[in-house]
Length: 187
Image (spheres, rainbow, N blue to C red):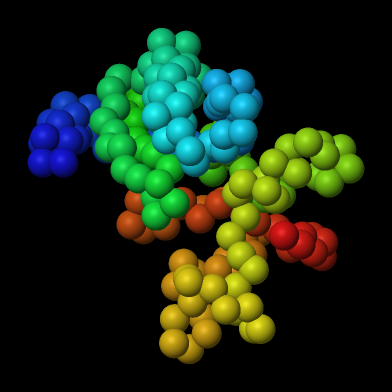
């Protein structure tokens, strides 16, 4: 961990501020995991297979970022691998982009990412994936979840407030657009 910190500080000194913070998490239901299991086995019976598939997919992601320039010209990266409480590997990566690829405007951020739900009718597959893998909750009210504090509030800050447009905060963070559409999404 200390080596990663030193690497990140060196990259920061060389390239300036970082541009992307990406979390990548293993999915025990990847078809490559299921294809490698023996009859009667479940993914959690074979953490070695999950870890191997995870590393192959993560290396593919790094290739897309660094060589295929998915986000524009990338200059460097640093990452750490950790394991969730359920035992699944995940990485936290910091990516340094060339000045010409910086996300310097709200429009550039919106062109690259969205924190809004995909349209349920027009993009059903993506909507289902977001609901299944990327939605926090439900928590609060009658739900008792590990993320809740003694006052019954989510310690992760959910639900997030609506935001009509993407803005940069004074502390180098981005508050992404999450418009109030009036549509309820149930998990």
